[in-house]
Image (cartoon, rainbow, N blue to C red):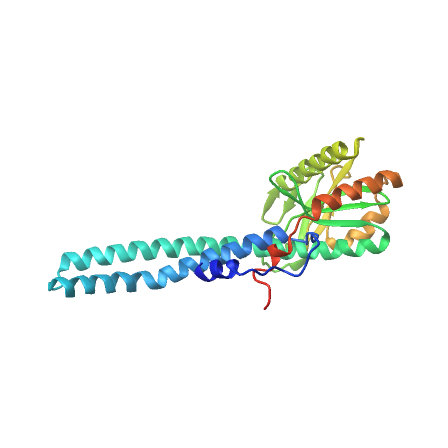
Length: 279
């Protein structure tokens, strides 16, 4: 903390002047960095706290000329074990959270790279779109309309059948994974697409439709109903957007939509990525 304070007091700044566009999983990456700092603090405390307690107790005995007694040693041991247990439990919890966020980040990165290829077909792609208290993972604007793409990363079970382990059944309302069913993924994608439709409609002054898409990296989606928003593996993006029903917008409207999305997404300051400019 002292080094960071000294570094920030230096009259230097990053050489980049324009605002940068958001990248896939940028918000998750920031949370992962914060968790890593918290884990470091707790691990250091876990290692140093017993030493500090022991050194303090020995110093107290030396300064007062007393000898060690069972009660004092017992209290010291209980205090040390309690603090060590606290730091160990909190560090373990943070490590599990960071592991989960890293899985989500890799998923968003995978989906983002797949969507970036759509730019060759004339699509505009935005990542980590900031909304009101949440982020929309990806937004697409192109010849067939506007789409809000939600990435959902879920680990697979390990059994004898690798194909069954990687297959999720979709009935239009719920996703049925090998280890359980989930409808919140679908509901969340719908809510976010509706929010984006309202925000864009207010921004451009005309009603606009935004459709939801759920991306499941690494999963084979078996769809058994035509209802509900599309749920696909990122490798199926090209096929999905080739065959999806068009809801095109005029060129003028597309320009206005892109302008609003550009203004919203270009909010990443170079200082957010660079702690200290090079000397």
